[in-house]
Amino acid sequence: MSKTILNKSILNILFFTVIFTSCSKEEETLQEENIINITEPKTPLKEATKTFFAGMAVRANRLEDGSEYDKIIKREYESITAEYEMKMNVILPSKGNYNWSNADKIVDYAIANGLNVHGHALIWHESTPEWLENYSGTDEEFEQEIKEYISTVLERYREKVTSWDVINEGVNNSGGTLRNTVFRQRMGDDYMAKCLQFARDADPNVMLFYNDYGMCTNISKQNKVFDLVADWKNRNIPIDGIGYQMHISYLKPIRQQIQIATDRAIASELLLHYSELDIRTNPNNDITVLSEERAIAQKLKYKEVVQIYNSIPTTNQYALTIWGMKDDDSWLLPHHNNDNEWPLLYDKSFDFKKAHTGFLEGLN
Ligand code: XIL
Image 1 (cartoon, rainbow, N blue to C red):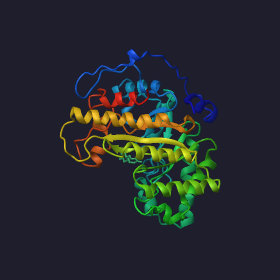
Image 2: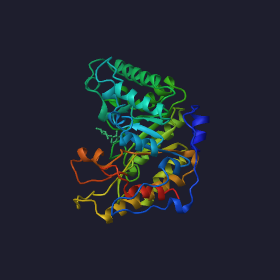
Image 3: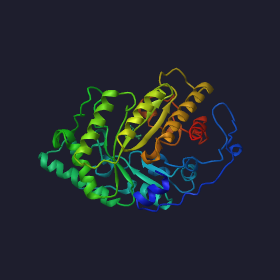
Image 4: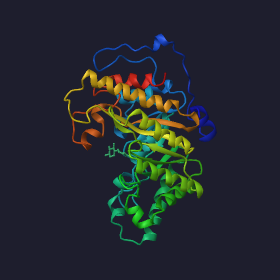
């Protein structure tokens, strides 16, 4: 599915006109500047990705007009996802008190700049507000709160947000079982289908995704997710796509694992979103500066991932979203308490890394 068809026929929203510039091979050749970085490539990512959106996770307070961050988004990307400001604990921190300020800022920025928005995430056990985690009402009332939340969010962003991760990380890491979240406890084993249906009822056109991590390496999780998808399809429960988070490292998953998992999504006839791509350079904590060797290994992994995604049928493509702009902003630093990590396409000074070249080379 081409990006233009996605917008015109399926989304029915004319966000922007993509103008493809033609570049000769010579023009596209990138000149290496130092061991880690490169000079500015001639072709922005969004022009190089002809059949899917080049996306990035953003933070509202970085979107100031004219900032380096803003300029890079405008040059490189055509789809954005809120890194955390469209999650439930931010939007609905207490019962009845919706806080739209940062979510609106992100969506308004996208509209002003002709960017696609992928919504993330309606139901995630790690972003459940405390008032719902410790809900004092009945199970029926709990379900009503969830239905109202999903409906309210989807109605507010109707025709502004193209797609949502309705369920994030609903399957356990072992045993191929459902994660025992408060949603499952209160709404039953079929809570995901209920949430998908609430979303579809609120917006007939928005695309609905199930999103998870470890999808290439964790086979019991992979099996369970595709069992769920098959079951939803059998019962006409709305599901349009699947998100593979792709928080990976330069070492693994290996190409074959990514390919097999990707083929499986294609066979399920869903859209596939590589939704949170970052590639760790230091999974074994054996370096304290990003070495040339490791920067090249990371570049090759970016190339491999992009190559695989670029090769799937265009009807299954949606977007490839990078989880943040520059290395020192990455969630991996505070999350894993490790300052020695460089997972993204730009270094802390907003300079292009070799990883960026890897992304472009994956498209050739
Ligand atoms: C992370 C964000 O990057 C952090 O800023 C936030 O504090 C916690 O969540 N899987 C997901 C994302 O689906 O929502 C997570 O994002 C990273 C792991």
